[in-house]
Length: 255
Image (cartoon, rainbow, N blue to C red):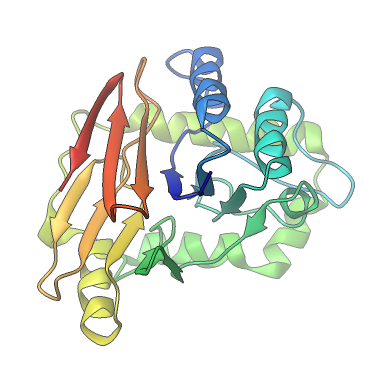
């Protein structure tokens, strides 16, 4: 059977201690297990799959055995599993590649079924404020990473998980997304003007967006899995060059 399907998901935030993290992991494992491996060519995990991930040279976070088992089963059947680090799991170094995943940066350009895709997590693309720019630079700074690695994992993981949980709970709800003020939207509009792209697929903003760009390209932004019983992923079928979307048990085609 020909492999024509590509799946896209982001912002699962495994391990985030809000809204029943065990149930969230169960939903994600179910999603991975239900991917038809005989028809699927690619699975793109576009960042913040883990709410806090930090690899030491000889230590990785415990848990997630069922997640990794499901991913490795897909890889064993011939599915290409791509992982793009987000701002919460930016400190993924070599472990995922040892498991068989293909680590990519952003923006990542590739062709699928004759269509040109630009994919990534979305964090740090486009104009960002001084505070966000400082944190992004700090998180990617090799000296800062080495200093953090000097901390005992017991303290480091408790600090990282506590900080992430506090940031999540401190956010005002509902979140109002404004297209014209979004740095990522500014980035893709400029990028599309100088690059031939059919589809942009990004996460990070926890909103579901399907927007036609002036260039004729489309911007698709992935929702999240954080809210109770929520999940969202996109499927691209190269045989028809069409997307379908599934979220919270409801499926529809995207023209």
